[in-house]
Length: 324
Image (cartoon, rainbow, N blue to C red; front, side, top):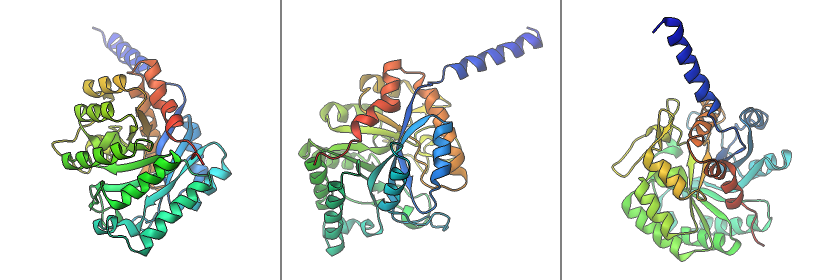
């Protein structure tokens, strides 16, 4: 084969790959907001990547290196009012007062005040859900993103699930898929069938058979694929910060794993995508476009109907205003 012919084949393969990208609407269903959130820049990135909406969850603690100060729910409301129909604010649950497993069962006055605060915020009809609850989290730096091991089947989560059930809104939960936690989570889900539980990061990065079993049992359980794109030098999609026996990825080098592809096709109404750009400085801004492009590549490998559901339709159904 001549060099010219070989070069043509490489170019042709590249063109086919680019053209195969999903080109429709997308909703970023897993986003965060804190002190360094640059709304104009985020809007620009959303527009450049054809992201119509973004779910934003406030982080009440900052980055350990100080480049992203703490945020709050008012920040989320501010951007949603400044850019109508672009941001879907949730009541943020990444809070200092929830650090420590004992606080999830033995309430002090601050936890009681938080529960009351959440309900009052729900009643404003400005928030589309609650989260992200940090239940079981693997450390990737010091400070508030250190190792956390909080009980999912706890007094606090029952109180939150009761509110989500009462007002029929979504709860986003970060919980790595340890088998004992899956059992405890199953008990919580079954007790609150009117709440919508969104288990972040492909249901705790669980294996396809575990996710399939859970989705088959519980109609009110959903999975987001936040940060599950295997691209860049950090992210849950590359098995960072660690993996366990129960952990699985969804793709490799832009190709969906068969078990995950079959899972998405079997449950097309139960998954959303998300960029999970938690910090608005440095590499994370580059990651927004990287992850958006990779999700388009992955979506193109699904049936068109399934791709549209994962890309935006499911998020619209899951994240709705409370029923007051």
